[in-house]
Amino acid sequence: MSQGPLMPKATAVWLVENTSLAFEQIADFCKLHPLEVKGIADGEVAAGIKGLDPITTGQLTRDEIEKAQKTPSYKLKVAVSKVKLPEVKRTTKGPRYTPLSRRQDRPNAILWLLRNHPELKDAQIIRLVGTTKSTIQQIRERTHWNSGSLQPMDPVTLGLCTQIDLDFEVQRSAKDRPANLAVDGGATLLPTEVSTATDYTEADEHHRSARDEKLNADSVFAKLKGMRSTEEDED
Image 1 (cartoon, helix red, strand yellow):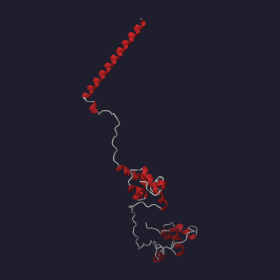
Image 2 (image 1 turned 90 degrees about the horizontal axis):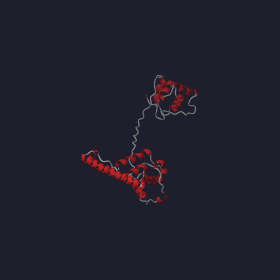
Image 3 (image 1 turned 30 degrees about the vertical axis):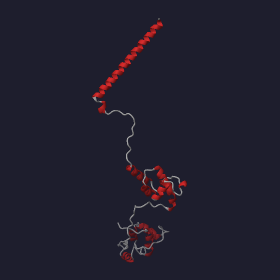
Image 4 (image 1 turned 180 degrees about the vertical axis):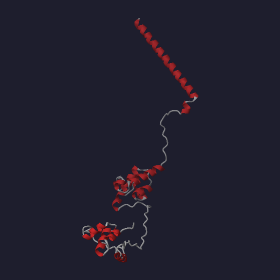
């Protein structure tokens, strides 16, 4: 499928008014329905649209139009431009561009990042808000010329970066951070090998038996003492 003109209806208006091409030829070239082209000729469609000359815009040649006018079955072809524009390659290197209206908010965003995400490196902050390393250092050491008036503000809310970019940098810092050492939480259960060992079982049984004997002796003496005090009261 061939590519149509940039402004199909405006081009169709010009072709209807300035050529004797058939409606089907104009419709095929402009990628419109033949009835729509007929409506343009009747003034029912595109009444307020100004015609666009496809010859001056380089989309058609005069020879192509004359050839199509002589042969009603001929299909118009879009002229190929001989001038090739260089492809613009988008680069992601360097600090992020910040609009002029937002640059005054960058120190507040830097302060917010330093307080809420101290794990971020200077290079990451530079990528997020488009600042310099010296500015970050001044805000961190409170030597910035406007340190007294700075207020921490979320760079996402300020429009300096997206939430996706911020989350990506935070996750990258979390990967680089060393794992936390296990904190001593007090006494824990003994391993299975130790608790099921023969020496451990015998020692546990010995302590249990000694504890039971002590409890039995205490209960017997307490019961005898109670009986003695009862007999003395009866006498």
